[in-house]
Image (cartoon, rainbow, N blue to C red; front, side):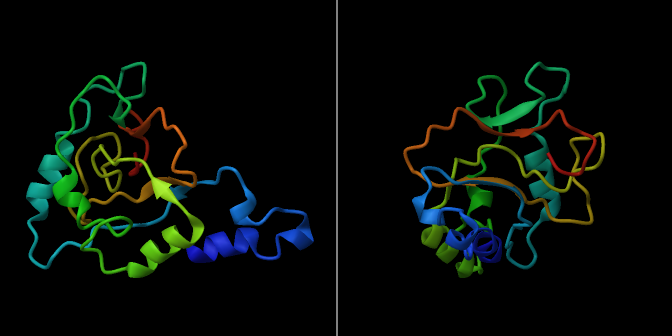
Length: 163
């Protein structure tokens, strides 16, 4: 993450680009490959089953099966027990470098109130048994006062192993 941000803004003034701290708002989204730093022996079948309950049963809805913050319909299991192990924001995550980068660039994320976005089976709301579910796909932004209308996973987009 630090490498991406530095490469975007290194030598910014020479290229006519403002330094990162001079922008009003910075939005960074993508597949950052953040995983769950689960303890050894964690029961992944229980994890997968709990998370799968958070996806809509039908993807035919107008909102693309959106699940998360700012979405009126649907319910999602409580993600807080899993969030503690999230490499990006979890207090039990072993990668403290990520927290340092977030502070350095003043980045934050909306509340994660949706099931893990990776690795689902194509065309299904079931998780791949060969991988631990994770929140790989994230949107980070600066400015704590920024108003997010919605921060959700797209459960209706079943063509990929990401949502």
